[in-house]
Length: 393
Image (cartoon, rainbow, N blue to C red; front, side, top):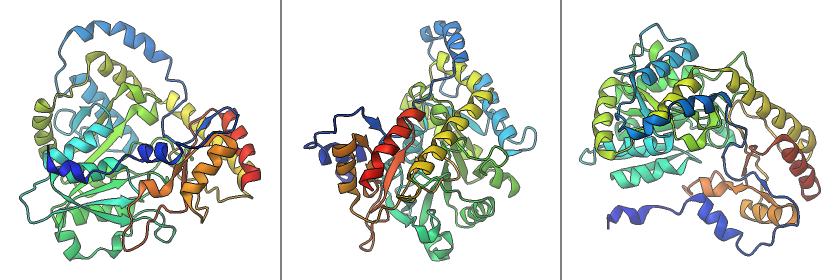
């Protein structure tokens, strides 16, 4: 067995299952606010595209994906982030992936140099656990950057010295953040690009929640935008997905874009990894990236739920509507494991304890006291759940 496997922590939902194994949920319809799995309907127009592409299952797909898919992604990036025409090459700067989960994990296996004297892999804390597992199995050492109320729920990058940066090989950022939904603004992104180039750090930006924003006139900035303003995409890799944007988590379709040299290495790795996207999935993905109407409707539905829940619970607990994502991240200032048990037992509402998304550093777990609420249920279910919670708060 790979000895590094022993360093992997149980996944948060394994911990939650063990925590609540002895709980008899309230005799009410379950509201699943625990896992961030979109429940809105997938875009109906994609069914016709899938049916028309079924013969593609009889062919092996190329790891690099169809040229049409890479071009659709490059065009979307240009529109979304205001890139100059042809600045992002569909052939050199874009690579389709089978969901950001596998790609965020495998890119570290491909690019982290275990023989380097630089051993750190930095990540926000709380974080998506794939970052940590990828670091462990590649031979890196995670460094957890606290994301607290005092830091605006994103890392305080100004607290990191040049000596710290010299020991970092790869930095994960999550923008908008999971679980907070808070943003790293454009000026900070540009500063990170400069630091990454100055200290030879690979900057990996997980942006899978970027299209679930509140203000139609003010979409969140992205790393591609910042890198473009800093003269190019070197040292930068950006990961996007159709899972949250288009309610297609089962499609397993996303992309990574950025540094051409890094992507060439990652593509070589992926030819061995065996993760090429099936051709019908690619055709559906092209149609999804080319349409924004369903994405705007998706945002409208989430925004409705945020407003409704805030109206019902805003006087009972902190309901700070985030800049983007579909989460709430309230600090209830008490044991979050007990909160998860109580809400399940008394109201049949499933939430994730915040401490399960974090690691304790210097005696402090920045997720403690918080719960992650994923507003993925339908509006009526979210309203009912909020009403059930009022007497418990």
